[in-house]
Length: 298
Image 1: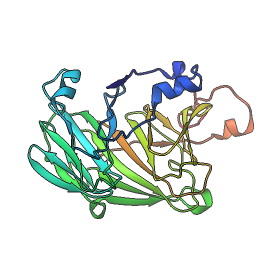
Image 2: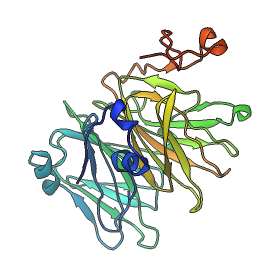
Image 3: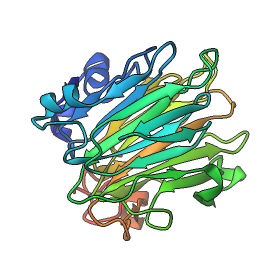
Image 4: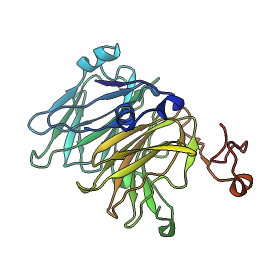
């Protein structure tokens, strides 16, 4: 298990390129016949991938010991989206067939979770997030036909995209974990425009379905002093609660990204759109006291 500590924004902006990558980037999400696991102190989120090829992969008691419990999901809930070939997930003896872009929510208390691929030539790739849970909700499979889709943006601003909400209250109940999959329309570049704030939750972004020579520039930090992390296909990045700045990609190719959100109040997603206020637009100032201005001193 790779443990990442929480980091203050004042510390983050002092890091060099490799320092930022070490703190926030998950470079290798999928390894054949193994599970990868990154534990972040930020909201205690766990992110990783499972790619069974020649054998099944089980996540159970050995992981629980590292978390101080008897088994992995004793006090946690699990969300999985399959971005690879068809596979199965067996939860305490109950087998679920999980096809391409199908998802499975596993509630708190499941003792054994076993992952397998149906065809070794096209193995399943299970991307997962795991969060602390206070109660048990039923394990449930979600197909692309059952998600709650929302199309946002405009081709003129290069941010036309469809947000497929897999784990949200309209689809199923969870304790605090939300997951979805965003697809950019052809020719579009920005996947979180307009930039906004969400102080009450953190996110993890996972990018896939990219060409080998393509990359994503994940922008982070305060808008008046940004940093970036260059990402490639099937990599993930941990995003602290705070301000969300669009990620762009230099090649006009289809891009898909899975996102996960942790929030205590799932029914209300508070996002403040950022702007430049009239005072800052016409004169250079160091700080602004408008709460929603990108130059505010918050």
